[in-house]
Structure formats: C-alpha cells, structure tokens
Length: 387
Ligand code: GLV
Image (spheres, rainbow, N blue to C red):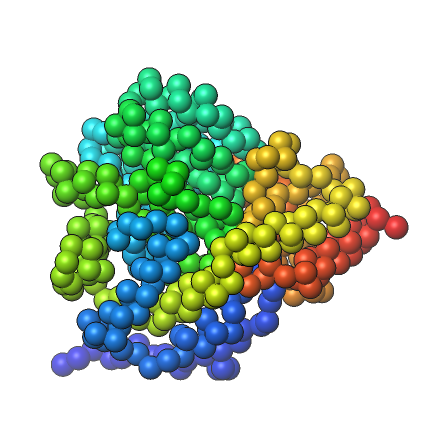
C-alpha cells in the first residue's frame, strides 16, 4: 500500500520574469539569437548532430582562448565548477599551489585546493591591487609550486591582473599557470598559447553572454601531461577531465560520462558564433569604449574608481567607490525599482565599499551605459548628493 501522496497545487500564476537590464557582474543579458537557440528541439547527448555542435563549441573556444590546443571543452556547471575542475585535476594531494589572493576568487581557490589535499601557499594582497611580476616571480622561485593560480579579472575588486612573462616563469620552474577568466574572457585580450598559460576556466554568463551553466575550459599539453601522469585519480568523478575530456573527444574517441547540457550548449554555440562574427579585436575595443564612456559620466558626478592604478582597472567589471555617507544599497534599489537596471554592491572584501557595474557582451552598448549613468544620477540626487 502506497502512502498518501503529498499535495502540490502548482503556482497559481504563469511564470513571472520581469525584463531587467543586467549591468552587474553577471549574468549579463543574452543576445536574442542565443536565447532562441535554447528553444530548439532536444537532441540526445550522444547523437552525431550533437557531437557536431560540441565540435563547433570547441572551435569557438579555441578562438576565444587563442589556442590551437585541442583540449577545450565546456564543464557542465558555472565558473565555480570550472574552478573546481582545474583544481581537482591539476593538483594532487601534497602538491603545492601558490594562490594569488587579492579578492574572493583567490580565497575560494585556497579553500578548494585545501579540500583536495594541496599544500596551499596563500599569497595575499589587499583588494584593489594586482600582483607585480616581481612578487610572483619571488613566490614561484621560492616554492616551485605545481600550480600558480591567478585571477585575470577579479570581479569582487575590479582588478585586472597582467599575465605578461608569467608563462615562461612558470615553465622554467616546473609550474603550471592556472588563470581564472570568468568575468574577463572575451572582453579583454587573452592569448593562451602565446602567453604560455596551462589552464583556464571561464563562465558562460559573463562577457560571452550566454545563460549560466557552462564553464569554458582549456588545458595546455603540459597540463594534460600532468593529468595523465597523476599517481592518484582526481578527487571528483563528476569533474575528472580524463572522463569529461573523453566525452568531448580529447583522446580520439567519445564515451559517455554525463549527459551534456543540451540546450545550454546550443546557446553557447550561438554565443561563440557571435564572438566569431564580431571578431575579438572589435569586441575588446567595444568593451574598452564603453568602459571609457561609463567613467566619463561617473567622473562628471564626482565618483571615483576603487582601483587606484589605472593600468590595473578591469574594464568588464568596474568598481566605483561609495562616497562617505552615501547609502549604496538605496542607490542600487532605486536603480532597480525606477529603471529596471541591475547595479551591484561589493562582494567579499569590497562589501559596502563599492558599487560594481558590469560591461559585458551583448550589454556593452552605449544606450545601456546611458541608462546606468541616469540611474546613478537619479540615485545620487535622491540622496542630496547632486543638484
Ligand atoms: C560573481 O561573479 C560576482 O562577481 O558577483
């Protein structure tokens, strides 16, 4: 005899999704073509037409990472899954990882790497500043870590980490260079091969402007060699790149590991196609232009960047100092209530200290920047900070 079924009446209304302009650190709004791709009929995750779409995604990823490595794929999950995939595969228990930690992402990598048994060297730096080559060189030559982690775009502080020269430094010390590009990929230059980077993960919902749920990932040959030479299996089955890579055809055949996120991957295929149609150089220039547009308006209002060194300012996530006595949350609420625009507050070390404005992908357009500026102007006026 089955027990009584617990009741469920369902929601009393149809799904309610207000139209919002997402100008925080992501997700960003998607191009209609990307959203439309998600409405296409489902395919089986092992069907040849779906494999063709997976191949097209890998080619698109080679372009955005600027690599000829065949080791690109989408992890099923958000940027965090990409982060965890690189850690669990590239770090063996007892390995040393030096973590450039100048915001929330470095802290999370320290936490994750410790869970997988790594010897974590937490290279801490005040939020709002990037690491110098000398600081990193000193840490790498001293510790000779298996992995050096850096975040190219620290979305909690708005810092852009320069990666020049680090590939050679790491190679010379037997270290793999791992870079988080969750909020930067597609908006600022990345040359994985030329810069000697060994592993990169990103997120679908930021500059690439697809819905959340796919984490672009890249490994160099050196990183794959390390994966193949491991003495122990990666601690995560779900993220084991021997297995996930085999689903994506890395090793010459394809076998079932998990069910690919069929509709999400259609969306990524289209998002990457759009990047190819525009061209990376045009895309980087568009993000730079709108970053300058934003700051011209903010500066007129007397607002200042949180990141002092102009060379270290990230253009895809802009951090704006909250002036003394201003209620940052009230301004955020007014932007949403009056303009249906998302402006974000700080995160981790910057909570209460900054606003964050994302300039990402499909949203990096002048009319959207004008709306953000209008929301700032109105919010500051309502607090008596502007005439
Ligand atoms: C998420 O990526 C954030 O920066 O808020």
